[in-house]
Length: 280
Image (cartoon, rainbow, N blue to C red; front, side, top):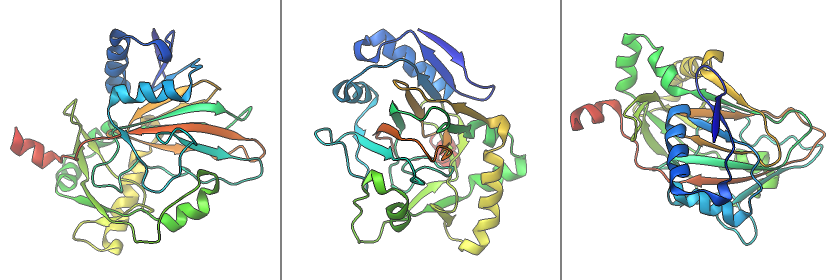
């Protein structure tokens, strides 16, 4: 196995490994690499849905998306399809997966089954680096804030036709998370938010009061020096750590088809910086 760093901030491109025939030592090496790089782009994987599910289960329990339908015969996998001519906005904004749930996903993996000849890349940004680059005063303020996150099911219903949104008409429940989240495995603090489509406001504040700071933090988090770019090929499996990064799917291939098989891995309750200090 070889790992080539994707950028100065984060990301690793992995070659020389078969996820369908992975021993415990190989998995432990991947685990360490994910903690180091945040996102791993693993090339050349000719694996079946069952093999992808088995690989996912090595990371933890599979997280069922509450609103999206799944691949027939494989309820653990969401098949995301964009047909030529569609403007598929699924994931086409900076976000971290499942922040709108009380216990959000630890990791997400996508396996490329069909890709356009050019375009359709995914961008990632490192929220460790974004936190570290804040001023001391902003770090103190951020450590005292929690985000109020609410999933917009109607927006996804119009954005994600091919993902077969199955959301019921009952209102989504909000989820409250610390703005500064401590990674449960590394102990490092990271900013933890989405854009205002999901992170509506700070807990105890109005949307009008919250929006200027949310806009500043989103612009800060997505500075180019914090990012890397994954260019897809058929057989590329990319896994990323939602506890320390956001991602953005580029919708720049209007005349081509793209098919991805997605699995998310359950996480643990979020812990803020102040909570971690008290526990220590």
